[in-house]
Amino acid sequence: MDFSIKDLFLKGGGFMWPLLILSIITVVIVLERLIYYSLHRYRTGKVIRDLENGQLASGEQNPLVSVSRVFTESANGGEEHCLNVTERAASRLINHHERGLRMLALIAAISPLIGLLGTVWGMVIAFSKIAKLGETVTPADFADGIWTGLLTTVAGLLVAIPAMAMAKIFEARVDKLVHDLNEVTSHLRERFFSKS
Image 1: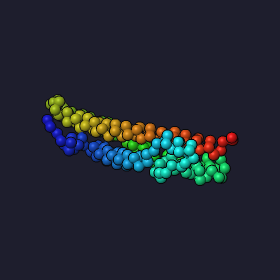
Image 2: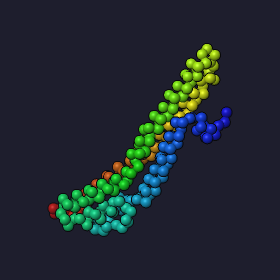
Image 3: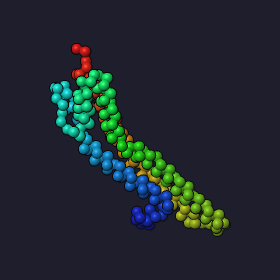
Image 4: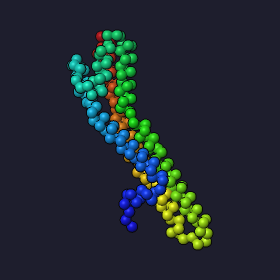
């Protein structure tokens, strides 16, 4: 038996539509995040070397340079003011880097549940046929409902697994950014406010 993706989709029933919508949202978020992260790449070592040499690296898209610039521009207001302003700037930056990740995690969590709901619905259909046919039931009579249910489970997992994987990959990138921002801020604090 050869089936096209369209045939399998239609055979999966009404629960396939929310899964299709969730898969499209996943693809859009993943592509947007990949483009965003590629435009905001940075090298921590280079930024720290430049800071140690007293240079502020260029690169408006570089998040470490952006926070370094905020730090140096607010350093004249005192250490506490400077750290507060820098923390707010870093928080905004991190928030931009996290955009869409909660949605990916939500999609990864609810897609298998929608698939499971489709499976339960398929079982309801199968047992409804069994009850209607009585003693004349054959396996082919209720296999249709079971097949429909299993297709939704597969579809739910096919949406959830990539969404979860990409959410975790992107979260690791944000965690690295937080670490690198702390490291750069520590270097700047030592340079501007150390008691030497």
